[in-house]
Length: 406
Image (tube, rainbow, N blue to C red; front, side, top):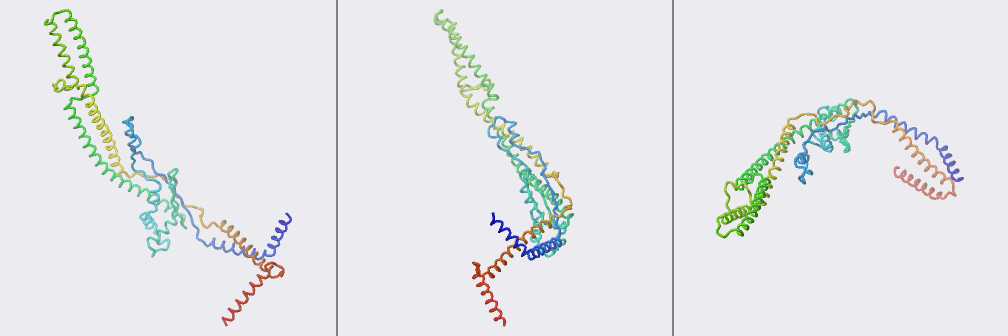
């Protein structure tokens, strides 16, 4: 504790000894900084904040899932049109074409006295005074323009907003045109494919007689059940008749003919080699599975193709509307206004920082000089010999330079 007090008192005594030097040095530096801050041209920053307009877009996942809720693997597919992320907005704002438009509109060559400068150089200066930032969290874009004229800064920031909206509309219109051409080609392919599938279904129906596989199979099963019941009944009657009557009885022969006819119909129902016009619409039990699978595949393909066709029609109409639409693509949350408070120079900060740095530098310089003097004046000081040697070396060097000059 005593040592700390002694060191503190020594340091205070040191400051008192060197107070004039430190005060003069700090005061001179602060005065220079104040003069520099007063003569430095003021800079003003104008800010504008924009937000992309929300648009209704057709999503194929919601479209198809609403039509085929049970169809797996459809809901994960989505197609969107017309949305530009914030990073692309920044690319547009920093583009050479936008920069040249700003330079020509506000005559920046003349205002900045850069008439002979190349377009690359003046564009570089412009981008150093214009700052663009995208907020990925909420999708907003911040535009900041720095200028010595507050009104010019505000006008340039607002011009950036309007120019970005104009360029974005052009890009969306071009994209809609390309989309319309592409979707139109896909629409023709879908229409041609749907016609082919419909022709295939019609040919299949004409060849097999299948119009409604579920109802027709039900009719086949019902007919088979009725024939089976009739066969069992006829066989029972024939058995009873044979027990009660002699062979060759006309009634027994009639029952046998009837039973043979029922069995023939059942064989035809299971596997019919030749179909009459009436039997064409009743599928056999052997053909029903293969006919059913083929019919359901064709029906499924036509259903999916119809949904795709409906979606492409809506996409095509949407692209046609987007191609000729010139509505604003973004909303200005805050338009830029002429700032009243300068952003640079920050005189208070400059003076405080310069004063603190000057004080540290002055104290460090004084400590070095004071230590050098103390070591030189006290023979018992540990660094006394080194200081004398340094002085002798400096003196010899000065004398040699003086001699060489003569």
